[in-house]
Length: 221
Image (tube, rainbow, N blue to C red):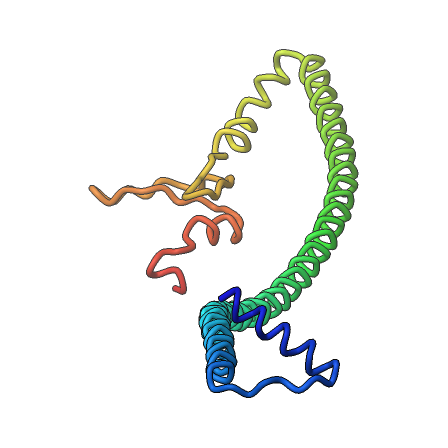
């Protein structure tokens, strides 16, 4: 190959110098052989380059397919995230409505607690007044009882004997009647003798009898 290159170099130098190159058949054959060999070398280089480009194209195609699959996966994930975001917005709206309802309920509870405190305060005040009134009445009853006991102690024995029938007529006939949760007093009128149906007759207030008999089948009568 070296002589052929030397021949080409010489031929090139002579051509530049304007010296005509001998055109023998052997020389022309060698020049054609060198050119053919150069063309083959270039062809092999081009084939190698083509193979390299094909390999690079295959790699790029594989990467493109991977990126396409990843893009599809990302698109699906994005769609799922969009749906989740819409669901979160709906739940946020529902939570806000529930929070408003709870706040309204708490406000109502505060109002009821305040009303209950006011009622309790008013009840305590009424209870205090009724207690004072009851204590005052009880003090008057005790004072009257003490006065009655003093007068009774001051009575002579004949006076005590004179009061015995009155006691029998006024205090002894008084009895207590009850039924269910109702309790009241009554005055014994008489005992009715009727064999096995003997019974007592007693006089009481209407509201006592009403409270005791309420709930019976014959209550309306």
